[in-house]
Length: 174
Image: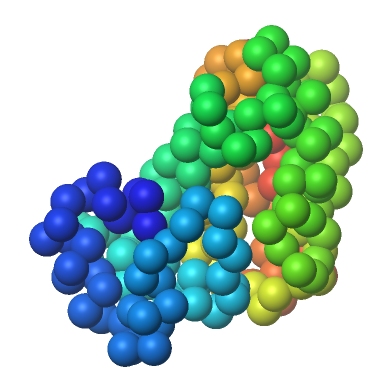
């Protein structure tokens, strides 16, 4: 909702109009600490993409992930304690803990694969949605950058939404 709010009142109104009245009611008065059903957030993401993507849904979803990381991991963000400037692996090592903080089911794992690389996997949990993977990639890229990693690159090599047993994100940086 913060991402949507930064796009202006007209964009916010157009997105919310695309949602059902019960969804709109649930999103009214959103608090920063509120947790919502994954299905609702998927419908919200889809509505945002339909209104704001301008033909590039993939980029918009990655931008949403970056915005979330910058908001929550940046100065004053609720997840800031999970980040230490100059220590990318500290941040990535905390990804499983952060995931469990906001998800009721499923889990994420972290594996260091080199001094400037790692693999993050998402297993089980909510039904897979391909948009979530793009948002996750953008979030990871921004988290790596906020930790001091330059030229962060995240590629998803396996995806539950495409039939894989888990989602796998390969992360690298300079």
